[in-house]
Length: 226
Image: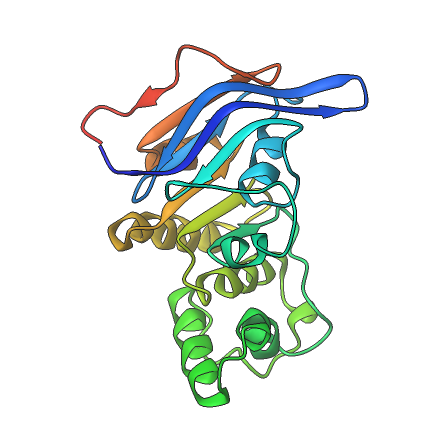
C-alpha cells in the first residue's frame, strides 16, 4: 500500500448543532484514486473542504505527509499550495483561457516564460491545445470544466480533489477527465473524488470510501488488484 498522504484522527466537523462529519480514523494514500460515495448529506463535500484546508475541523487532528496541520494561520498557505480542489461548477474569470490557467502560477511568482510553457502543456493535456487566446466564459460547459482541470494540473499538486467531476460533462470531455485522472497516480498524485457518476468513478477507483451520516461505513476498501 502507498504511503498515507492524508491522515485524519478523531476529526469532527459541525454546522451549528448538526454534526456533518465524525471520522475516527481515515488514511488516504499518495498515488491512489479514492472515490468517496454516500447519499446526499453524508458529508462528502465537507470531507473535501477539510482535505483542501478550506474548512478546519472543530475537533481532531489532520496530518498531511506526516505533518500535523494547524487549524488556522499563515503556515497553512504552504500546505494549501500542495492541494488543489476542482469544484463541480467551473469558476472561471472573464478573461482568456491561458490567463485563467496561469492564475495560480502568477500567485506563486513564477516567471512568464515558465508559466507559458506550463500552461501550454496543461491545455494540451486536457485536449484544448490552441485554446489559450479564447474567452474562457464563452466556451461550452464541458470545455470550461476542462479549463478548470487544466488550472489545477498546471500547479502539479500532490493531491487533487474533485467534487462531482463528471456532472454535466459531454462524452468527449468525460473521456478526457477519465484519461487524465487515470494518469495521475503514476505521477504520485493522490486523487480524491466525489461522484454520483458511478460508472466512470468505478472505472477509475482504486479505493472506495463510503460515508453515511458523516461516518465511515464498513464497505470502505481497496479494489481487487489495485
